Amino acid sequence: MKYLLAALFVVACVFIVQSARLKNCKGWPSFKRKSVSDCEETHEFCPFKRGKNVSFDSSFVAPVDTSDLTFQVWGKVAGTPVKVPFPIDPNDVCEWGVKCPVKKGQKYDFKVAVFVEKVFPRTRVTVGIEVLANNKTKVACTTIPVQIT
Figure 1: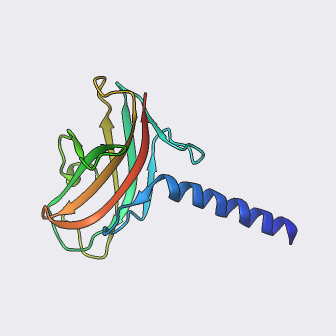
Figure 2: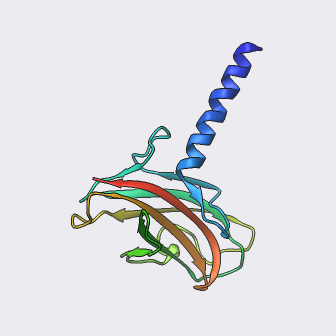
Figure 3: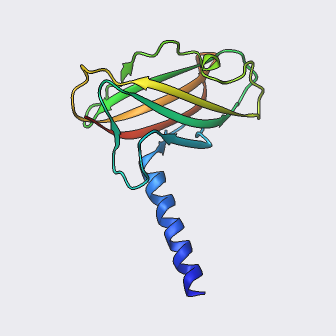
C-alpha cells in the first residue's frame, strides 16, 4: 500500500509539473494532448534554440464541421500585453497533417514545426498557439513558457 501511494504521488507531481508548463488559454477549448520537442517535464521553461526548428505535437476535438482551419503562433514578453506574431507559412492546419474537412466532435492530430529565427533575442517569452475554424471559431489554444537561447 505504501508503494502504491508513493507511485500515485509521483504521477500526480508529474501531472502538476506538466500542466503548469503547458497551460490552456482562458476562454478557449484545450488541446487534448500537447507536447513540445526537447522540453522535458522537469523544465521550468521550454528551450527554443535560435536557428533551429521546434515541434509542437498535439490533438484537438473539432467544435464545428469545416474545411477552413488556421493557426497562429505568437510571443509575449513578460510584463507586456502585446502578442507579437511569429511568421508561419503556411498557416493552414490542413497542410500540417490534419485531414480536412474536419467533422464536429472528431479528434485530430496536429503537429507543426516552427523555425526560431536567429534574430530573436535571447530572452524568456510566453508562446501561444491558437487554432481557429473559419477564422473566428476557437478550436484550441495553449501557452508555453519559453527560454530562447
